[in-house]
Image 1 (cartoon, rainbow, N blue to C red):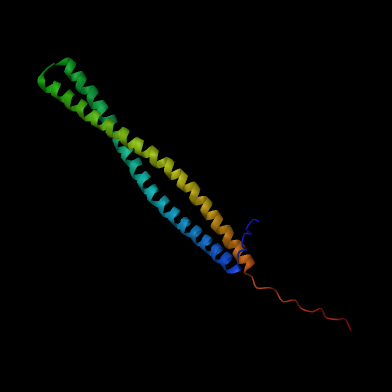
Image 2 (cartoon, rainbow, N blue to C red):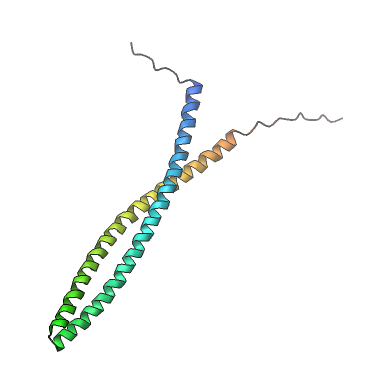
Length: 148
């Protein structure tokens, strides 16, 4: 004979519902915090990418002029200038690539976090609205007056 599953008591069920709504509310606040932190991190990486891009453009122009000077007059000063600009340009490019890669990772994570936070907010609002409806006090019915 199969053992019958016990029926859930009302108190245990109420406790489970309260715990679930509390965990949903906590998850919603955690998601909001995570979105705020990741947004700040994404903003920082965006400014870093802009800075490195601008520096790369400047160094590319400087490299072009230094190379032109080197072609006109091949001396050690011009050779050193070209080498220094090339070295700085290489380090700037690597920093830019690193920042872009970090930004890509952060932006995908941020998009997923925003989506989850939006869902959590919607669920929380819906549950709050339903709770408000369910916890309304029952209306008292008035008796109809009889016509005289």
